[in-house]
Length: 619
Image: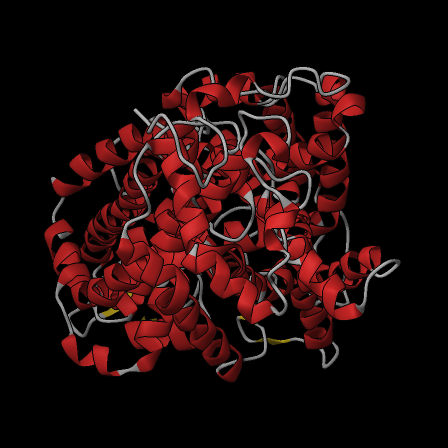
């Protein structure tokens, strides 16, 4: 149990819940998780995203296999976990979403708006993963899987059915629809493609010649995209009350399917070779700074910090729930799943490489190429290929849905927090309206030129925002709000202060590493690519605008916040006032800062920003 009294917090803990009952008109009751398990499952589903399943295995293998786990786990502990903990804890303490939570430092409220913008930018194209999964699920019900044959209307003369090729003594095979033998090396150089590649490229995407050739809308994908948003809306129709029930299926089913697939594939020849290829360490790779950089980036991609979703989910938690234990469990489960998905992936690739008699390195892929080309081709070699294909894409759908639940909820929560009395009773309409708007925006990615737009947005949208936002979160909490004050807030919730190691990480180590990673990312910048296609010269300008857009609210809100105080104060004093918690900052179980014990008169001794920071840390 929490301590009965904390003189720094201002009021006895046992009295917090009954304060402020007569403060004018009663506020709308905010939703909360029906059970703590629902929150944990929602966060497991969010953290275990498509990046864990489709990106981590490739990144790990490319950067030293088992040796990559050394920088990955180290950076998870000193950057990923602290960032995750801060984002979750300040929202759990205040019961506020992505924008309102920055009441603890109004000068940086633009950070919360930036995280909302990132969600708005990525959701229209990210939901295509769900649409593709639904389309593949439908096609998996065919008597013959369409990505296993070359005799279809979308196939070209370069299509080669790997599973039906005949091998000669000189390691060549006869392509069924060409008149000459092609060596394995020539198979790559000639530009020939497997049926799975051509199905994805010419049936699913029907890709055009370039970014400027938008082409026709692919209505079969639009229909699947619409189905994705209908599912999302139905699961969120009552907010977290309904999504909390859906995650019992969407968060747990992927583990059942992934484990079943792993057990099945392990019984096939070549699976152990794939595992060996995945986990064998290459310690020489650790001398390359690129490996450490990619480890840090992968930690952030897989945990999803900086998008406001972690904080939004935590804002609905019970005030006294153990934030530290929950964050520790979630980070372990998330990255443990990444490692396990790598085992499943490379066991499958090892089996596939032996089946078609090609080196495993030639079938290793990343992202959509792994999920919608390599995996379908590999699963087609298993007994009951239709069943395994259907289950695999059902798993991808479940994993994607969990992420999109919070992507929608983060904006809906922000709107309702901003206008609680007007929108609380219209939550269903707000959710439906947002889903409709994002669906309409997503249609542009369903055109023939959509894949190029998809690649351009995906290349830039996360390049700046997450690192900058997480760095500012750590700096704001540790150096402006104060680690000691933050520690007292944690103690108010769970009865224990912040561990000293976390104070050190938040104040120095985590922001320093994030800043260095951010700088190195900019220095190692490369223009976007899509296979052999070269983007027009203006494409990077569009990309950088997308990258910078989530950061623009930060200076804008700084100016707005300072100007609010300048009517009666100097610029210097206005900045100091903008750095202090405003009237909306208080624990979720109180209704006003007076109940929390914030007294602005206590800060009269502060004359500069540095002295303010020191005062909070020495309090």
